[in-house]
Length: 497
Image (cartoon, rainbow, N blue to C red):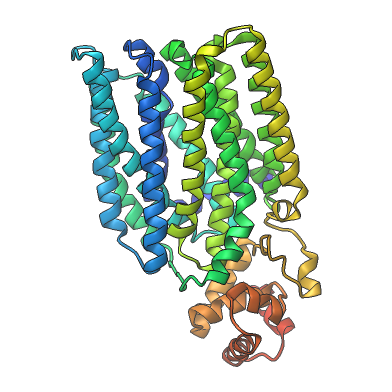
């Protein structure tokens, strides 16, 4: 218990007030994404309206993610953080305002056609704003270590859920005012957060991108699968007929429980974060949701659909952390890796909406079709998760793994590299600053601190071994040492008071 308390203290100590911007963004995203189906049912917008809203939302996100990835590939130093985040916030504010007027404010009376048109416009605006916010916060997360980004994302989810639970019960116009003010300050918070982290980006060669994407396709694939199944069940389960208040609280409580279950091991066992193990949480929760769907449909405030959605959330957190980790290690532009990955996940979500809406009329409560769908979904998810977990590159994403590759001088091309513990990272930064090392020499220092081989560093940074040896020589000279062990000894020394 003492170690958990110390870990929480360290976590809080590393948090700055402006880091809450990510939690604010998540809280407002719940209001225009998680509530939309029951709210449309309450407003009498059934039929194709929910499918159009979600379809437009995901289609626009795919386009924006793709544009971000292409733009960053052509211009790796793309850094218009303030401009892009301000545009994103403005679009989200207008989109929330439109959707609030249609779905939450009863005083405004519009016909089904007008309401659907306005919600379509809101979906366009929210899709662009949501995609830009995601890639920009992903760019920030790409400056963090695996442990740090894992704790940052999960703690942001907890804060966002608590904040959402507080403001969502207020009158609609008060919610709108909070959303406008809260969203308006997110760009400033994002900019301040960026200023606290050194963002480096190398010219993305094809070889480096191929290596990065080859290590990302498995987690992205499984997240896309969960996203597809989650959006499919939104329509299959008749989510728009669920009571709004019940659905909201069911979703909030289930999400909070799952996020707490994910973050507790990281606090109780601070020396290890086993990313692969989180998939073992996602599978039974999502599978249980499908089985409940077959027997209880959408009763209990749509608890079955919420459980299926939790599989998507867990896998999404995992893939988000792995992408950030690859960005952190390779120094490839975050907008490329996040843009490409999120575009794939967005496409799977859009496909789930299309298929779910198309076949929703053929599936009835307690029928054979829903039972067959549940069994097929459980089998499909089990097969995919087991397939992914068999690949050691996923299991190797851990913050303290004593990787055999280090001693053998090898490099798992399709997997992650060793993650330096936070204490070692801080020590490396201190030494780099004192010795006035260049950014690349700082990277080399971090690898030397882990006992990495020349071959490993050459493949990691996509340079020749001679170039690595030159950097190593410069590091040795600046530190006044003669071997890798000398470097490790300096790293392990207690800093002088």
